[in-house]
Length: 262
Image 1: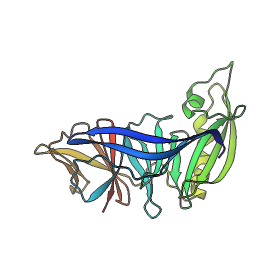
Image 2 (image 1 turned 45 degrees about the vertical axis):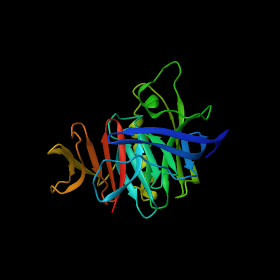
Image 3 (image 1 turned 120 degrees about the horizontal axis):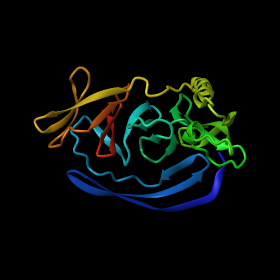
Image 4 (image 1 turned 90 degrees about the vertical axis):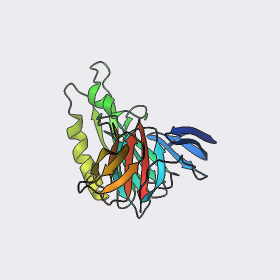
């Protein structure tokens, strides 16, 4: 992947406040602006805020958006997260390493998937300028005066977050009534199959979150307790467990806690 000239190193300090206490995340980070998103590698370990959750697992990340786990490569230490709000094209997707040192940002319509040989990231770039084009723009913002022509690309990253392969899949020009989905879907299916990736959260388990004596409790379909949040309202909380049972995501108040289960 070609990188912009701008590279910078700095201190990343994020103050997070959660019920039951607050803590600061401080990490020495190197951030690279790229054509298709930003990948950040942390040089020091994150210090995460304490979670109220009681469960057989460990908090590994806290995100300031609503995500659900979509796919996991436990053996390689990566997980894929997709927008929990179901907003469609343009909604955020994210691939992140368990240790939080690497992340690859994407969005619906130009998604990111975990394969057997690495992380597969789709993207669109303007055929004339090379700048990133948002998928929702291509799908919904057609202009007869200035139609956009964009190149659909696939980039494969290795498990260290480095670009291993990049190729152009097709060129798409907006037309009135153009079918964006029919162009992208077969190509995405072909590429994900070639790299052993699973589409759209196959096997993800949607948990029930209910009140239990003033605690918010996450349960699976069999009624087994997966996680408990003491003295916490279950209203508007959502929880998802990966198909292999290794990653739990819990959404509350627009934040997502990510746990690696034991």
